[in-house]
Length: 149
Image (cartoon, rainbow, N blue to C red):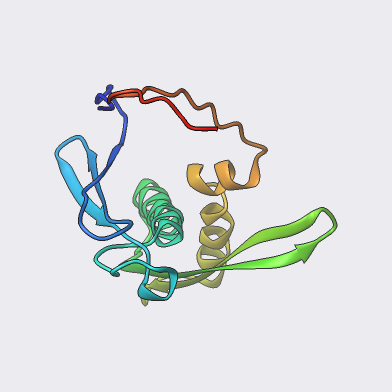
């Protein structure tokens, strides 16, 4: 069983349905699953939903921190994130569209323009735009049986 390390997220299959996963991050829990059209039971967010949620939440939080730091009258932020795969020069490319709605009657045109620039500075946005490395390690728990050729 994967162990919690400080700052880690642990994902465990639940055995309920084909794809359902139980996710824990510190004291927080949620469920992930695939939609019915992909063979799941749609009991939780799909993997790309989680990625889109991370991007939208990070942008919204970044905007809130910046506006608070500047003392700007930002009342709220709504972000709709969609994901598409498009043909690129090297094959399929992931494209995330973020429609940002800023709430606040007192925001000037300059403040709104600056906030849109700041949205691109959120850490998840930067991570998605960077070349990344994923390192995997394998641990096996269970009885090893001989394979027939």
